[in-house]
Length: 172
Image (cartoon, rainbow, N blue to C red; front, side, top):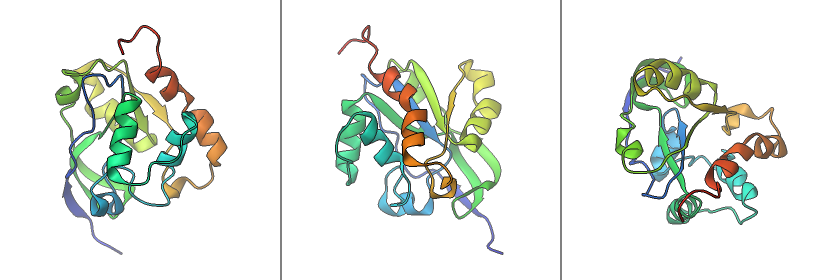
């Protein structure tokens, strides 16, 4: 049985002063840490889902992914600043420490906070929501571990992200 490892979140959040939706995962997977960007496992479907929401080609390199997020007013980060974890298994997380989301929330007009996967949502609700006072919208995981969901079902489930990023009353 593999042992857990203490991981300190290595990735900076992606956002700018126009970001209106904050998408939070749990913690970058080993594959994401290796490529130094969010949802870096080639089998993770986050980027395919996002591209489908806007009917655009899937961004495939970090700078393209960053540009995609910023052009669609999406901020990316994770719920946790650190934790003990075995590989990419959210189920193995112990001793979680939450990120201080004020870094993003104080400088961007974030209207909606989304959590990708049930563990991210559960940890957000337990560790962040009580002090922040803002709820999250739970979305299904795009991880390869959630293979039971078809891509079309994920795209449908993620439709609220597009709605949150295209509100007509937001300044352009």
